[in-house]
Image 1: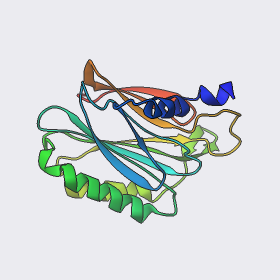
Image 2: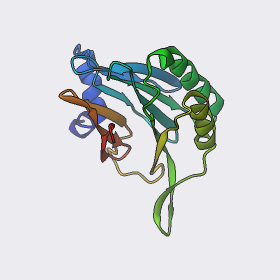
Image 3: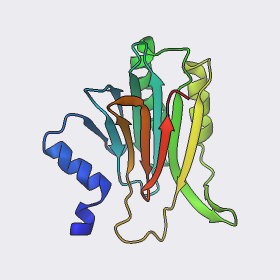
Length: 188
């Protein structure tokens, strides 16, 4: 039980249940948008990526804060996921700095190849590129991280966590499935 309770998504869940207002959770087959600010929301996450697609679009707002649109869908509902992302972006588009190239972070199923873990071909990639092209004529940057979906070890974290540094919200730590960490400067 201690091993399960120490998994990152379990810690975040306990923090939310304890009243934390700076964390947003995205359930399966949902999309959530959150404005990231130094004294407000600084963590957004989803868990249970057991074959699911997780997509997070991060754009800069005109007031230098960021908006994070996170979605978590089963791979058989790509149209639903794209439509949910579209609706979220439509909500925030009047406030987005259109000189900034938004970032798209995808966490999708992978498979072992001779070169290592690679993404399984997934139509979400092309559909997302098409959607982002319609909203952002200035272009966008895409980061695809495959994850191991089979033969996972016990107590393998299935979370996809985005944590923004409250002291400088352009500094982002991403913890993908399997607790693989990436550090991103959103101003680069």
